Image 1 (cartoon, one colour):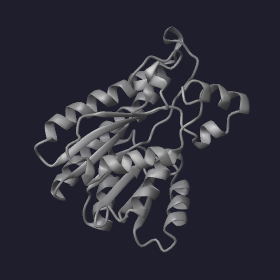
Image 2: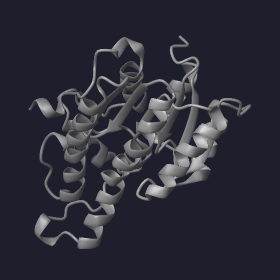
Image 3: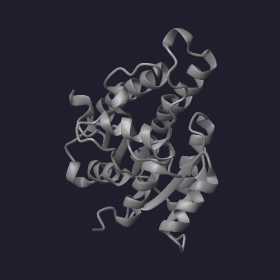
Length: 250
């Protein structure tokens, strides 16, 4: 179904995992897609795989912790495709794990928040004016079940993902009557390359955290994203959509 024909989308963290799956789903739906990643090579590889002719994709590098890089990402999108209607702020990383708050490195705290929370703000800051000028659209911010519950040993990641939800709701209220919908997705543990690289024992332990006793698939998150970005979700804004196999229901 070409439910995104005529739309232009930008996806950060599009070089692998959830971002890759969302970019592919939007492209398959007819959108022109900008695939941004801190590793431009990965973004180019994904773009070449889904759109061998390169007619409706653009791969570029973007470190979302750098406001100027995000501003240029949006500007490049407008130069190439002439508009921006959909934005998926997905880039992020977990930082240190299994380190308690009282021992967490100060520079690591700043590094995790700079990408995971500041990066979302940078996206909103430059995407919103572009989407307004293009006649309106929708934005998705990638939070996590860690944005809904506490997780021991990951204070920076948990703080950032909680912050994304608050930022999403604030922006949604500001632009609800101005033609821009802003929502968040909160995935559980998804079978991304990072998780698949773990040992079989570690993957089994992560799967067991979910009542469905499995990891989520990137394509499942992509289908939820596609719905929330589509006109089928026209009355949905300011909300957080959990896709976690029951993790947060415990």
